[in-house]
Image (cartoon, rainbow, N blue to C red; front, side, top):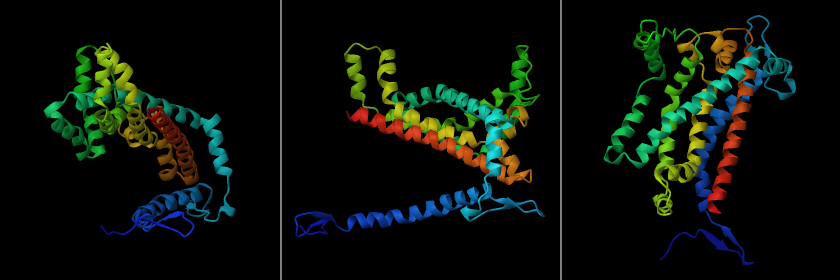
Length: 309
């Protein structure tokens, strides 16, 4: 049998790789260039705006492309507001909203993903199609549907009024914003959770039952620990966009009492003559998300080592 060798032996007995590694490197080149052009370059432009200047006439941003010309005065001012000023409440509010939305998403999404993976049977394909169906509708259109349901004369308000409960859901209610985040992002949680639960080794569940564990104990001691990597990945997938979300709050509240970091970024970039503050807020938010992603990667590698051991 003939074929191109993947490695060759040198005169000193050592082996070096052939052309296959180079070939796969060439395959990865377009994706690498794509990331550099559409992520690194825009991010550097954002940094240059954050540490740049303001045009004295037109009051628009003047990026400082040379790092030697960067000014950190605006960044220091924003950081001061975050740790001891008005932006501190906004960041704490955003974190609390995201934490509540992620926890509630797990309460809603985990049972759905578990049912799809373990008990759906011949209905699995149809139910998965229904899970993907919301992606066919624009996010803003789905939020507008909720606005119609939650307005003063909407069906939800009428249903609660039957029990004597009068709530103006669209008047700066934190619960409305949290529920809107859950509604918008829970499909992104269910699908990776389903993939993780569907790959569980059924022999481990059978072994737990053979050893005397009931369904509840098997679920608590075997299924949940084995699905932790999928849970962590699904949580990160929905938490990251939630931190930068601003249109959910705009659609369902429009109140300063429920403003999130994304709303402040939109305000500084589009409604003021201080775009540097908006850019600095994006950098601070990016740093926070990098910490979350680092925790996810470290936790995932640790769990993989535990599983291999």
